[in-house]
Length: 261
Ligand SMILES: C[S@@+](CC[C@H](N)C(=O)[O-])C[C@H]1O[C@@H](n2cnc3c(N)ncnc32)[C@H](O)[C@@H]1O
Image 1 (spheres, rainbow, N blue to C red):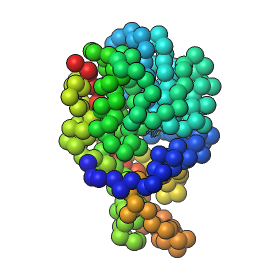
Image 2: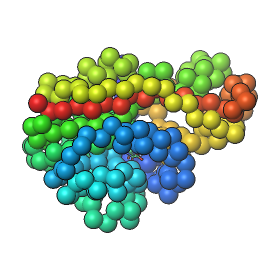
Image 3: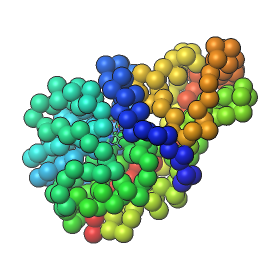
Image 4: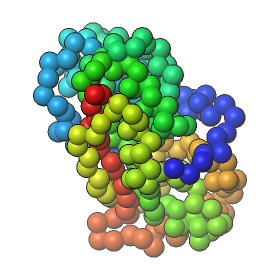
């Protein structure tokens, strides 16, 4: 995975961005909802004592997870996201915390679920280590995330304008598997596939990122000042990618089911 030149106070920025988006998230989360549906389809059979939704957002997986979990803990970095989650699922325990430093004791969960959250973490090794630490033996970890070459349309258009991609860079499939499946977490099922979302306009495509809080840039060198003229030029470039289906935005998804041995 490319080294991230992590911005000072990066985690606070991520939390701030998702806090801001908590009120609009559910109206713009079509992509996240599609991924959630796919991930739910890979759920192992079981009756779990204590499950964890890691990076739960507004709690869109809570009802599904509660149906086969005696207790559900929903963890997120963003307090506003957790408030939404608590409204949807009052019986789950909400915890404000960092997926890379979980505030739980060893071996307490038998199932950990995480959809489209770990790509915001600084170090996938630490996610693997923390998940392995808090999972019981034989516990399951089901996760979806993004890999290399996600959002090529945005990268392509900005490269024409100022030579920077203005997107986050994601690990290749091999890097992802190597980093997350640390000793003790064994892959059971891996699915990799692209998903293209279609929009009426380039601005709608960009709003689908901004309104769910997904516009924070991780790498310092992709953080460029965007003047009004550059923004107009970007929208013009993006418009050239229109097909009969509309304006495309493509993601490379990885869905992983791992088991702690
Ligand atoms: C795109 S949302 C996905 C939310 C939810 N899982 C869903 O599928 O709708 C990503 C979530 O991950 C959370 N997040 C980002 N970094 C995190 C971290 N280090 N620890 C915990 N949560 C984090 C964000 O606050 C946000 O709520």
